[in-house]
Amino acid sequence: VLRGRRIELDFVRGIAILAVMAFHFFGLVDIPHYAAPFAYICSVGWAGVDLFFVLSGFLVGGLLLSEFTRTGHVRFGRFFARRALKIWPSYYFYLFFQVIVRRHPISSFLVQNVTNLQNYLGTSLSHTWSLAVEEHFYIVLAGLVALWMSHKISQKSFVRICIAICAAVLVLRIVLVALGLTKGIYGYTHTRLDSMVFGVVLAWLSFFDAPRFQAVLRGKLKLLACVAVAMIVLLVFPVKSGIMLSVGFTLVYFGAGATILFLIGHAISFRQTRVYRFVAWIGLYSYTIYLWHHSVTSPIQSVFLKLHIPSTITWWSLPLVEAVVAVVLGVVASRAIEWPILRLRERWIPDKQTLAIASSENGAE
Image 1: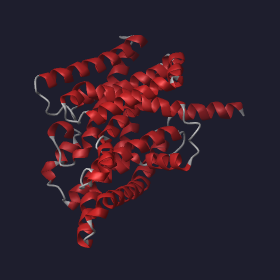
Image 2 (image 1 turned 60 degrees about the vertical axis):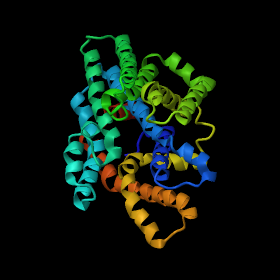
Image 3 (image 1 turned 120 degrees about the vertical axis):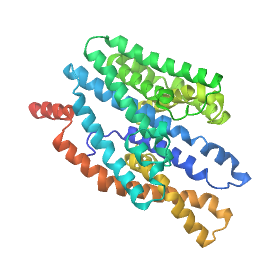
Image 4 (image 1 turned 135 degrees about the vertical axis):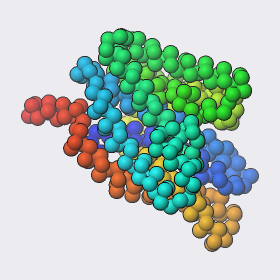
């Protein structure tokens, strides 16, 4: 299951899920005035989702581009089957659990989430909107690669279309904000797709313009500048502001991409530290942690209320306990559901690239 994982990418996942948990958990407690700077930093943790988005575009785009460059075609049935076995077992088990416990009215989430249209139809499982965006992205990406594979567009046209999509979504957001039609911009696929498509552009550079990609990786100061600009935008403009809903999202995913490239290109100096490896370990379970982290809030809050824990302690201990329980729950869910299914997936639909590498290694021996 863990074959071929890159620790620097798990570290990115770890940062992303920690940011999301900080945003959700600290956003539900009354933080004292002396900790206001800390609260302000936690308030931008929603951008962890954009980090996930860009990384998803980079990795999934890389999978399809890799197969196409190696074989000259892409087996889309195989691609979607492998994606489904990676994502759906944990996701639908989570929905089944929500049906059983009845914490939310079934009508408030079941049809919406089962059909992966929750970001448009609304859902009481509010954090799952991003999972719908990713599902829709896979379909769009497969369509673009299919066009390329059919020779209707060239290699360069493919990346130009990706860049055009990013530009079109940006223009659409600006127009919607200018017209006052801001409802849904945060979670609709057609207004958030660009961050994942930007990840595909980075993947394309790594495959087809390696010198430029390596130059970007070496551009330490430029990457940090992009990260700094994104952080300034995050700290200055609230997530629901017109600036953020329009150009802000673009600047944020540029910063997310720069963060990923910086961590890929400059990880060697600190990847052996315990903190780095611990964050990467959390990133290993980031998907199931993300699925389940909302479920721990109410039970743990109830325990704190029954114990009459003072507010001077609650503001930091409650989110900390929630995060620890969410991580434990995510690890258990991953090992109980996700990993066994992934082992079966590798038996039923093995990764062709892994097989090719193994075959070449055996031949060399």
